[in-house]
Each structure stands twice: as structure tokens, then as C-alpha cells.
Image (cartoon, rainbow, N blue to C red; front, side, top):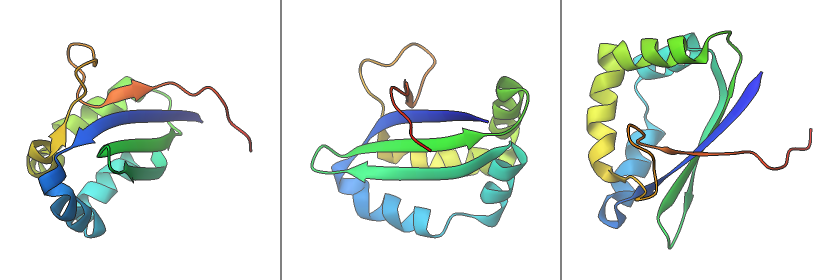
Length: 109
């Protein structure tokens, strides 16, 4: 199992809507997340900075392949089409990144 974290901004005007849609995530999106070997997935909101921090644990053998399968899923693509306009990627992210990775510096079980 490997842990992953990432950060992105959230449009202040979209906080209520983003919170609402995540209270009612589409079942097929949840199924795809699980099929991609992701567990213990959480998204946290930090205000007033309007930063989202996502955390998940990956239990599969090929993270890149599982993420590609998720990205190819039509329902997940529609979910992202809904959520991405509400998000504000960090200026410091690398080319090709949407959520900027955060690297673990401490963990206690």
C-alpha cells in the first residue's frame, strides 16, 4: 500500500456547490475509484485559503495503469467535467498536472 496526497485551489464562489456534489458522488464514480485500487480516499477543504487536500491509499500493483483506466472511464470523465471548472490549479504545478502532488514527510500508524 502506498499513500498519495495532492493539493488544488477551489473557486470561492463554488465552495457550496463543490461540497454538495461531493456529498452525493455518483455511484459509478465511486465504483471506478475502487476498481482503480484506491481506498481510504478523502478530500479536505482549508478555508479561507480555499485549498483542497486529497489523500488516498493505493493497493494495486500499477498506479499509472490504474489512473489511466480511471481517466478513460466515460462516467469519470463526466464527473471531472462537472468538478474541474470549480477547481483552481496551483500556479506552481508541473506541466500536465491538475492536482499538485504533496509528498509525505511524516506518518504514524
